[in-house]
Amino acid sequence: MDAYHKSGGSEVWVIDLPSKQRIKTIKLKNISTSITYLPASSETNGLLAVTNKEMTVDIYDANTGVLIQTQSGFGQETPFLIHPVNQ
Image 1 (cartoon, rainbow, N blue to C red):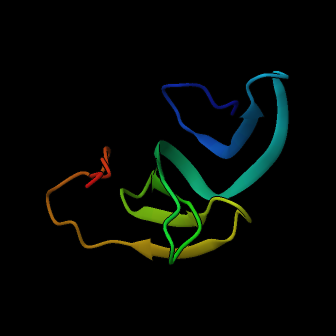
Image 2: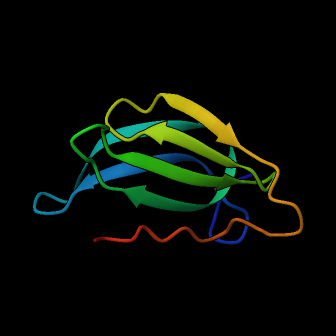
Image 3: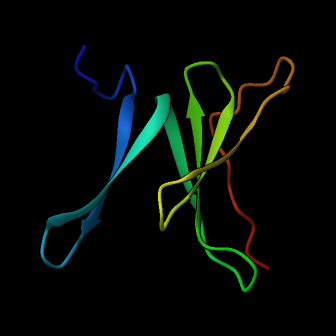
């Protein structure tokens, strides 16, 4: 099945906006429906927090595309949106 906005997707495309070129493709472990970029800090690379079809959150290193961990156990909550707080 081809992915589109209602069914999620199996990869993330990183686009260079000035050139309008795809510069990286990150293959996802699971079909995913929601993604949030968490900016890099002095201790970590940027991260991608990706809600997958099992309603768990896969955390990827945004630079390498490596899956770091999967978070689960949200109970009745659905982890569709994650908003980083800038302080």
